Image (tube, rainbow, N blue to C red; front, side, top):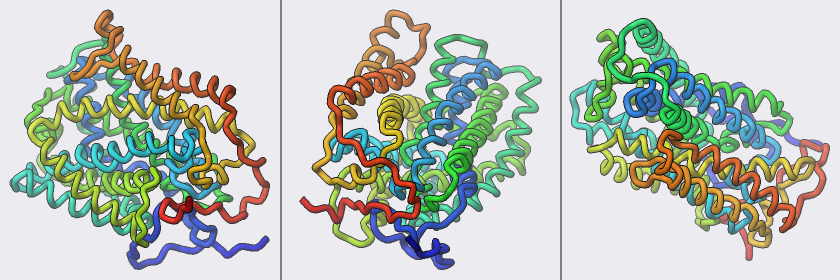
Length: 478
């Protein structure tokens, strides 16, 4: 069969129409390697730095012990990110829509709703706060005014849509990469050979907490992965797509977390002014550029958070009969996220520590389910299942997610709000919730899949240019 050549994105910023429908072949464009920028830029911000800070300042690790934990957590989250990103081009669908094969149409409401809250509200608030603090420190303006400025720009980029988001990330990655690289080299040069103002040495509890926090950050992007690969041609190399996404995520996370660990090792940490604590050891010019980069980095991260939060909202089956439904939802998240960020300003540091671990608590079992589902369905198509509307049911996914999530949190959580049963008995284990949740969810789902026997798709066709199966919550029929 013949198909139209993939179109190039328009030079003019046109608001992306529609919602979660499969991207038709004539609208496919882009290169797998653009994902290096897509997944580098949103990590070049203070929220990433802060993961390294808490590894030393909150979890008590020395610099090199902290780096070992951070690298391990980032590596795990980036490998899964690479795998999920490679799924987008074939079906042309958003990540949470692809998850319907594992959870069924209505069961998918659970993970979609979780990701909606975490992405469109939680992450948005966390990153907006760090951008606001940076602007306030740099200019002397009130923090609330800085928050308002950051939020307006974030929402504007996400409101327009996919192509502008990708364009913004591309240029932001270049500028932020240079600034943060300079800052990191300075900090690491001082931290590697100097004395310590924060941190100590190795403890297993501190190591697992730091690794869990790093995994929560790196894997926090996983539920968005194919949102930014669905516009690529179905002929795009899956290896290149996965490699570009995974490398972009891993390198940027590790670089910025190393800077945070270095800063905390050198100067300690002041929870009342987190951005000041990070930039204090830097020369004046580099310090001011870094503060500006923190504000721009918050925008780069939240452009993705709002965009993908809107996609998850629609993937939950919410019916909005407007052509600009995705853009409208993104605008709504901006308003709600601003209010949440405003409320979090007084205790931003500890709110972020807890939020990072909570992210890992639900993402890990979700990953266990979706990765196991795709393995068990290898060689088959899922396109007709995820577009089946309410008729497709798979209770195995929901049961595995809920049971694994509950058991792992009940036994292994190490939070300010709740400490798990086993952690109370043996505090030195730190926090193994994410690891246990992943393994439990994968095992439970594999067993239930064999028992429930959910419908499978047809064998994969060799025709990569076949039109994708259409799906959109706004167009479903009963």
